[in-house]
Image: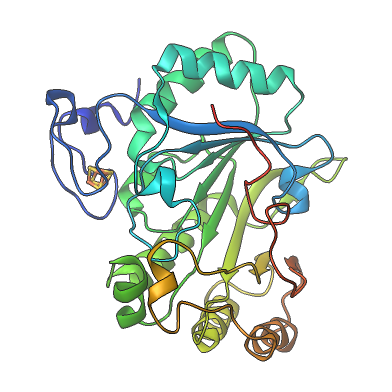
Length: 302
Ligand code: SF4
C-alpha cells in the first residue's frame, strides 16, 4: 500500500501543510501539480564518495521545491518549474534504466512533493527486478510524521543543516521555522538509520549524512550547527562541509548573498569540524566553483 496516497487529495507532505487537493488541480506553495515532474536524471559522480562510488549515483532531479532559496543554483527547475511530467510507469522505467547502467543507488533530489508518485514507481521498478538502495536527498525541511512513513524504505538520508538562525532562514529560504524543523527531522533520520554503513566496496547501504553549505557572512551558523550535532547526535555522524556556494538567482542583487564565502569564513567551519572531533565526513577544497564541481551539473536534461 502506498503510504503517501492520501496526500494526493490533501497535501501535507512538507511543513507548509497546504492541504490542497492536487488531484483536482489545486497547487500549494511549491506549485507541484498532479503528475510528477522531472528536470533531469543520470549517473552522477559528484556526490559524497560512498554515494557516488565508482559507477555513479542514479540521481533524479525533480522540478519544484518546498523552499524558496534566493541563491538556488537549481532555480530553473526548482522555482521556475522547468522539466516535464513523468507518469509513475515512465518513472519506473527510468529507475530500471539507471539500474541497468550500473548505478549504486537511486538518489532522489528534492523528492518530497512527489512522494506518492515516487513510491508507486519504486514499487513497479522493484517488481521488475531492479532493487537499489534509496538515497533521500533533501534540504532537511521535512515533517517527522512523513519521515516515519519512510522507515524501512529509505536507506540513506542526505540532508542539510543550512541555518541556525530563524531570521537568516526566513531571508534565505522563506522559512523561519527551518532551524527547528531541520534539526528535528535529522534526529528522526538518525534514529531510523544510525551511523553510516557501507558494503565491501565502500558504498553506503544505510545511514544519515549531514551537509553544511557555508553561506556568505553566516559561517557562525554552520559552526553552531556543528556544535549542535556534536552535542546532540555525537561525532560519528558523517558531515559534508561544502564550499561551493556561489551567488545565483535572486542572490546576485542582495548583500551579503551576492558574494562567495571568504576563505577565512570557510576555514572557521573546517576548524570546527576538527575541534569538535567528527570522525567521518568530507570537506570540499576552497576553490572557485565550476560547472564540473557543482553538484548535479554534469548531467543532461530529461
Ligand atoms: S509539498 Fe507542496 S503542496 Fe504539499 S504541503 Fe508542501 S508546499 Fe504544500
